View 1 (tube, protein in one colour):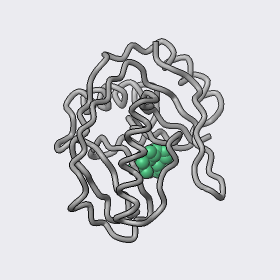
View 2 (spheres, protein in one colour):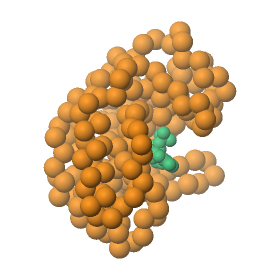
View 3 (cartoon, helix red, strand yellow):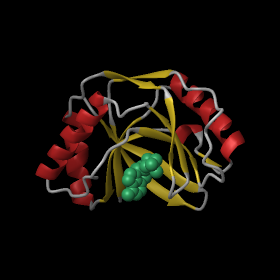
View 4 (cartoon, protein in one colour):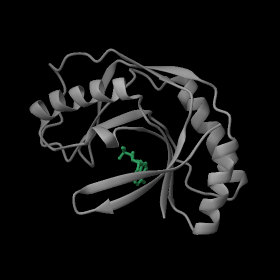
Length: 169
Ligand code: 2AM
């Protein structure tokens, strides 16, 4: 099964991220992520076997994550998959530190796939027709988080769907 570690926005923030996704889609076209799918990926684990997944559920349930605040104040683009995202003007140091700590622990459990660089972001659009975020209002959101989630991703014809398998302590 395909797994990743993520922060999920609280409901009030989810609606505001959805409003940014609407504004971005009006300008850039492409496929807008549904509100219930909006998230920040902390670590993408890829395909994981069932016994390994069970161990990850156990690990995440006992994991203590330092609470934090992430300021979302910039638009961003990834050229290749046509992604338009919202995030910080620079990678947030607390999120980068959390990503590193998670990968240290994942690697000690034998997982592979640590990316060479981590840019914390919330994907709002995929396959955007125009990667032009100039002129959109500058985002100004604060995301307060206390827990991360272990999430399973299912791919269907209408896109990815997510199911939460575990929440940090
Ligand atoms: P994205 O939002 O930039 O597409 C589940 O697929 C989550 O893991 C998505 O948020 C996706 O990021 C992220 N992810 C990171 N690396 C990935 C990869 N190699 N393949 C698929 N998803 C990846």
